[in-house]
Length: 82
Image (tube, rainbow, N blue to C red; front, side, top):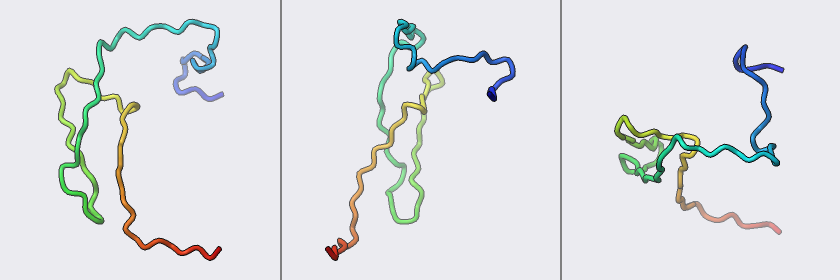
């Protein structure tokens, strides 16, 4: 088995520990969801960019980041041959 680091110990996924009480996370005091909007209007062929400026004391958890997209298809509907 290949390890990420040479001296890294082997472990099982925590989701498989069904009969062990998991430890309580106490490093993060609070969390919040913040909405960011694109810095420019969304147009055809232009990348969508966001400016996320926060203080140095905040931590941005990219694993928990969500992108909500509301889109509308403006093409004509295909006619089914059935």
